[in-house]
Length: 250
Ligand SMILES: Nc1ncnc2c1ncn2[C@@H]1O[C@H](COP(=O)(O)OP(=O)(O)OP(=O)(O)O)[C@@H](O)[C@H]1O
Ligand SMILES: [Mg+2]
Image (cartoon, rainbow, N blue to C red; front, side, top):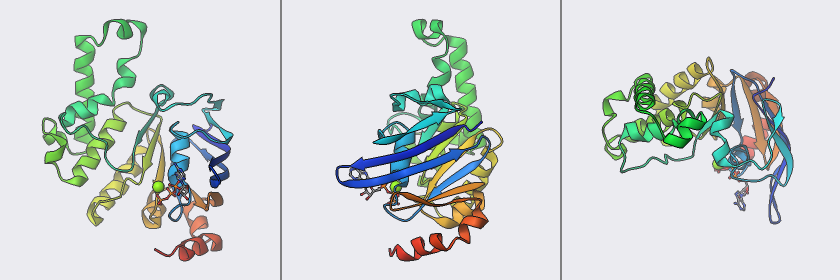
């Protein structure tokens, strides 16, 4: 069964159709790229999946179940985590505390937890888990630093750690490589590639090269429509895709 399915999603902003009858199916344990030139509708689709934007038509299914009245604060209990374009870190909290914010999904399990707040033992377990994720991402040294003290590439890792600490089944990334150096991008590709063992990843990217190396499946949008979808090699060989990218003058 798919982890996520968008069925015939259309989004209109006034007279502008940002997405038109878009269908995407994300299988568990795969990295699924959503690519397309500027203004193609990638972020709009991302926002629909995250519950920020309500589709004008169409529906979303998570593990085969249709979502009703989908909102961003439902994501955690659906087992979905996200990072946004940019960082979204709390600048006055330490790196570790920023990551702990992402652990809410576990903290809120059970009625007792909701009534009495986190127990001390649970708090300790959460911190251990957060440190573990920071270690996996190579930023544990900065656990007690403020995010502002870190270079941009490392701050991006902290944002990723925050998403990973909830142990999602689906991780949504919007342009994770934006602002990264060449070598940081290579590291990111390795990192994302390694995630598919434990979760599905939806990767929204402007850049073809990164997506081609790391994705199992790719959906290409142009002017709000799906113009191609399939494995990277097939998508890369598709003349419509080449034309969309050539036509998109910077
Ligand atoms: N809130 C909004 N209100 C009106 N129009 C919008 C809104 N959000 C997006 N759009 C329009 O919808 C279209 C798709 O935009 P979107 O941001 O989804 O593209 P994108 O593929 O993410 O582009 P980029 O590569 O530049 O990030 C664009 O024409 C954009 O101007
Ligand atoms: Mg965008």
